[in-house]
Image 1 (cartoon, rainbow, N blue to C red):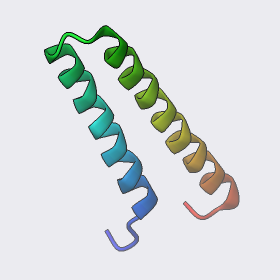
Image 2: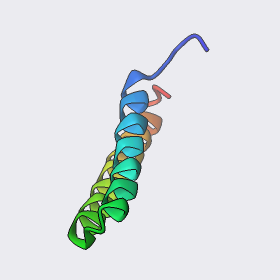
Image 3: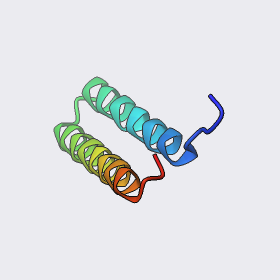
Length: 61
């Protein structure tokens, strides 16, 4: 594990927080917050996959 790609660590932590947000929103019974957290999770995952694809195409991954 020589080369840690820290941007992916940050993306994964952000996704983890979004998933925790879904759980908190369910616990508080806030339907709008559930949808917001799901959208946020989708956006974070999209950015992560796009970054991975760009790094693969650039040959740096």
